[in-house]
Image (cartoon, rainbow, N blue to C red; front, side):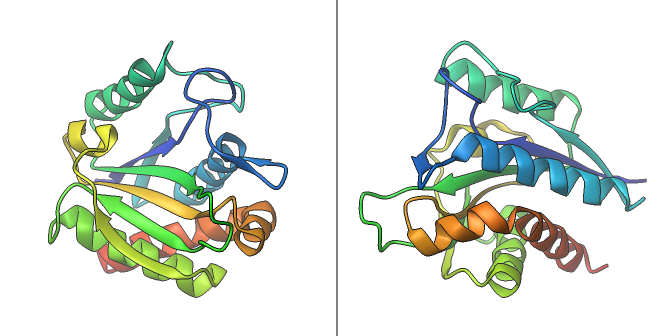
Length: 187
């Protein structure tokens, strides 16, 4: 039986729930591409079944932030997925802040351990700074899905070196997430 992975490509292409911007990049474009690459990689591995929240770069989910987040959670819960991966990029007013972090609902859970593997894999493959696995029970998608969930902040779109990686290494981010999944499952 295949492991069902739901990939949530964070944010919408414009207006409702659009993401961060920096150095001519838009979060919603990066998350869409990384999610699409990850889905393609997972589809070549018969141990996995995959669905994505956005199936085209212009697809808009919901009519406001709340309904956009609710739509993503509902898709994953109704499938039902075994694991939920929400892909994002971070931003900060300080351009020196950089690195990768993973958010989870609670410490020392399946989500937490999955987050550790994914984070370690991204840091190793893409050479980002390890900012750790962080507990954020306030995040809507982590709080409302029925399966282990991680929210992956790939890198900072507001940091010049991270932005360069977000521009040029989107496939590598996706492959790193895949490698993290393989390590987590012991494949």
